[in-house]
Image (tube, rainbow, N blue to C red; front, side, top):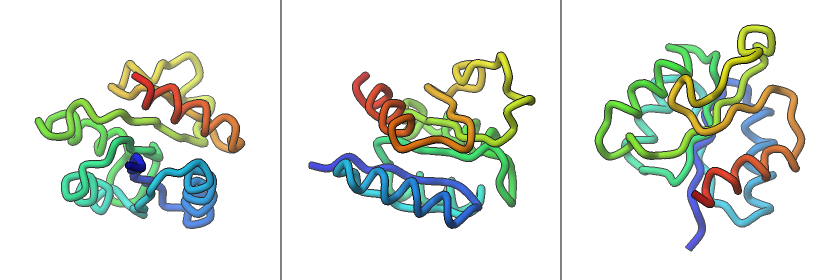
Length: 122
């Protein structure tokens, strides 16, 4: 059975790139354009992985991550943070926020694939 990935980012083109990249590797994907929809979809679909942009409308990805970690059904769901704020996150580990990995934008298919496979292999 295919693993499900929730892609949370306000940039439609980036969501499409991630969806196409992951679909090529056999993942089933859903998309959320903002913080509220990210939480709603995560709770309803209980994905195997959440790819979560740090800066989104309606609340930050870090707020979404905190909410996921408070929910007993989603607390252990792996999260890969994605961000364009390279300077803000320089030297910061994804684990400091409760995520498994962090990718900085722009990233390539190979980097995305590597992060997703490493996180889901746990």
